[in-house]
Image (cartoon, rainbow, N blue to C red; front, side, top):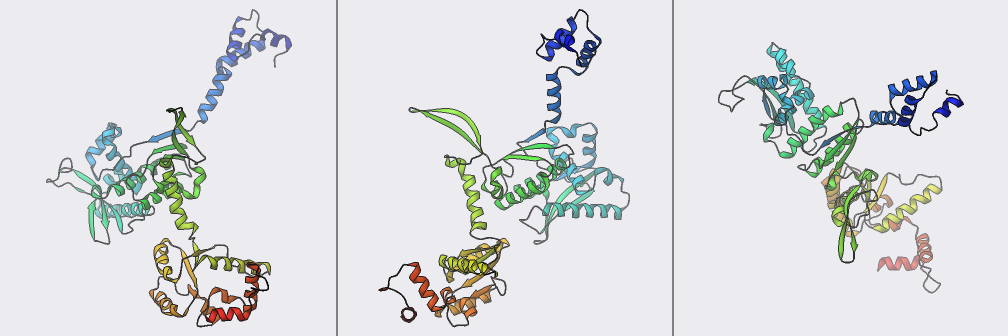
Amino acid sequence: ALDAPERSALASASTSTELIEVLKKLPSPTVKHEALAQHLAKTGTVTAQVEKFILSRLPKFMYFSSYDRMDGAIQLDATRQLIGDGRILNDSNRGTRLFVDFLEYAGVSMEEIASVSTYETFNARLQAASNNITDQILEYWTQNPDLNVVVRVEQARPGDAAPFNTGTVARARIDNNLHRVDTPFSERSAGFVWFFSFLVKFARVRNDPSPVVLLLDEPGLTLHGKAQADLLRFFKDKLAPHHQIIYSTHSPFMVPADEFASVRIVEDQVELKGVRRVPLGTKVRDDVLSRDPDTLFPLQGALGYDISQSLFVGKHTLLVEGPGDILYIQALSEALRRRGRAGLDSRWIICPAGGIDKIAPFVALFGGNALHIAVLSDQAGGDKKKIEQMRRSEILAAGHFHTMADHLERPEADIEDLFEPDVFAALLNECYSLGEANKLTVATLAAADIS
């Protein structure tokens, strides 16, 4: 370290740049002064070192606003030439480049295709590649599980359009096992082509060892709402563990309702000055309490859909006839817990269907969402036939339809019949603060039930 006189000689310098200049001008620098000057000449100023440190740790950003569509076929000889002279990187060859990535994603490279000399080995490689790519794609394309992706390599036919009329051609085709037809990849729906191409491209990005921030502008525009949900699942499962993802969207199905804290809204804000609207610029907000209905629409749509799927109905849903049944079941369940007995498992969400006639439509609407649904229903005199029809229809799993009459072993029963008559009369008197003149008794309840 510099001693006091050595530091005093440098006192006029307040920055590392000034320090370098002062050291140069010292009439008789000490050994330590010279060592400090050499160190600064080698490493640069403190500011430069800080900048270098920060830059070395800044993430790389990859921005995507347009998304490549994979070609349905490539001519292998022509593609090797494109790779050899670097033209494969040209924008005009992006579809071809993606097909090469597709082959590698499937587990068979162009070099392997060229090196195989026997038919059986060649055929086995292509079948393995087809099975591999099918498994990977169908993991995230749930709209049609009857599809198979097939890789074919064959000699060109002279009648085909150039360049597929000479040499060897690699093709991607889609087999539909349900309809027993196969079609060229390029003739599939725009949504499937986009989704397939996206997964192939970002499989390579996912495997990049250096972390990057992916900036995606409106991904999945051509996708059905269900396919957009599949895309979100791909983001979460395959990309997010390796890279940070930031994307823009106007679609409610691209808003992760289970991760609402990650959502930001973008608004073109204005300020009203008198009668004039003055632009304040584009603002990114995390409070999502926007006054602009256009900005809020995707959030409202996402929340509305999620609520309809998981708030009123959950993974485990107990359907009852009306809201009153919910209160009774919750109160009885809590009373059991206070006595050290088992109450209703917290995983069950109690949902009112609005009457026995609405139970079947409700189950038909939500039962296809892999939900575990059970029913607890009242049973009046005219309900027996309806209940038998629902049990025969098998819209619910066997043993999932229960009535109060079954449990109380009566021809008819409501949920109120769980209570002894004197307990229920006392409950009503207490609830409605009924005085002696209007106090209910077991006899008055029985008379009301008969009438």
